[in-house]
Image (cartoon, rainbow, N blue to C red; front, side):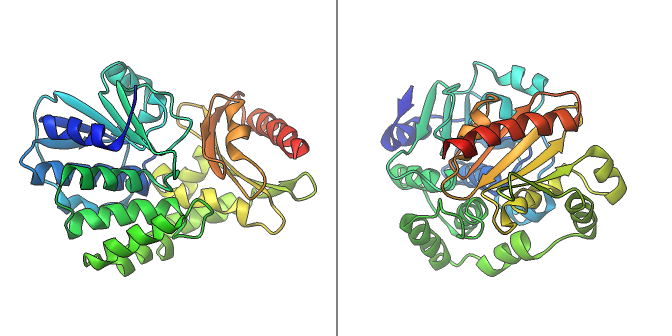
Amino acid sequence: MRIDIPFAAELLRAQDDIEILCHHAPDGDTVGCGFALCRVLQKMGKRAFLTVDDVIPACFGYLFPCVEKQSFEPKFIVAVDVATIDMLGSPEHVAKYKGRIDLCIDHHLTNTDYAKYTLIETAPEAAAAAETLLQVFYAMGAPVDTQVAECIYTGLATDTGCFRYTNTTSRTFRIAADMVDKGIRFEMINKTNFDTRTKTYSALEALALATLNTYFDGKCAMLEITQEMYRLSGSDESESHPLKALPRQVEGALVGVTIKEEKNGIFRASVRTNSPVDACNICKRFGGGGHKRASGCDLPGSSIEEAKKNILESIRVELESI
């Protein structure tokens, strides 16, 4: 059931013993929302804790101190920035929560309505789930202190490429300014997420960039990330998120694709596009989705070459349609 902001605010005000779920391969929006909601609920005297079926990247370590560790049997479960239940993680983890999620707060228009109640703003479409979550906090009359503001800013900055992507709106800028006014360490957050790279990430990037190729007269750029690259670089999937933006940066590219080999042998595509190409259309053909300029999907194929062939065919169809 789709709900509005006041309804979501009332739901959260009425509940206690709340578990908050983030998606696997966590980015700044899902963990920013998760920590923000957890802190707000705890500051309101409620019990809350965060669950992520993955390693939270070290670059988000500054968020951890903002919440208290609590352990209890949850009575209400909230997912944040999770468009489909499969995004929660392993099949076992997904099965644990299937049919049990009470509320989803998201900004993906392709959300599959797997929760009992789903909040998605459509006018205007939020650049990040953090935008919508903040509106819920205001409707709750909840405390938005400096720590919560840093969580919200993290979601905004990372989902907009530090306010460079076309999903950024005037409201996004106004919210970011409001968070700055609350005394957040925005310089540290920006430096940590956009200007600082570990040695292992740098080694992974070099290996991935060596696979960069272009297709369709340069309109598509693609790179690969394999399990062997993680082994050789000493890196892991938690550091791979910045690589998703690189192919689209190639001059002339309308479509940028990063294909990752998962530990379970699945190949996952992250698609980033420039206008007028719709990334969501490309991924929908494989049961994925997201946004017009940023979407993802799992690809059929027992090898990375088969996976590439499949996504390239979908890109060909989309390019021809425009």
